[in-house]
Image (cartoon, rainbow, N blue to C red):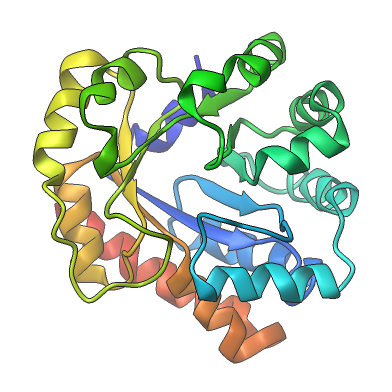
Amino acid sequence: MSNIKKAFENGKAFIPFITCGDPDLETTKKCVLEMVSNGADLIELGIPFSDPTAEGPVIQQANVRALEGGVTTDKIFDMVRELRKEIDIPMVFMTYANVVYSYGAEKFISTCAEIGMDGLILPDLPFEEKGEFSDICHEHNIDLISLIAPTSENRISMIASEAEGFLYIVSSLGVTGTRSEITTDLDSIVSVVRKNTDIPCAIGFGISTPEQGKKMASIADGAIVGSAIIKILDKYGKDAPAKVGEYVKSMKDAILKC
């Protein structure tokens, strides 16, 4: 069984995202531990990239800060090795195809398996081109997680039918970032997903408040939050972990009321 499924076994899942190395890897590690102790069900670890096309300005700046601070993929792998001594929560990497290419796909994915990662999200990888990564992922029991966007339309059933781990449903057009409201017809997207797979689905992009998290989790199996957490890190820096923990608890508490 995919380890990721465990994240959805106890009701609605809360999935926080964090950019590794912003402001440094020690802070990232502390934030992850706070997330876990405050109810996170699955962690998305962002590997910084110089051209993160799916990200809005908040996460773009986090990528810049992390790269300027000297973070590397190998250093992130080492941090995960340390985390795995303390936590067994499902964790996935979110990064860009170029990061995996430049490292070497076989080496990158086999290392993910070796250090205890459970999945990989590549937002710039077209579904039709996933084969070059999916075969290696299957070989190493790493779930290659697909995204479904409002523009996916007649491709939703096809993407859902081949899904693994969980399905990442993009709440709205454009890039990541907090939004005052989400107007996409997510119910119909989730309905098509449900008809084509029993893999859980979670909604991300634009969620920042407990009310939004509760609403999205009521439609799907969970909610994903990134930019709101990165804003806390930007504001508090190395003092952010406790604040991140408080935020995760408020989101998880709201989602449990679904």
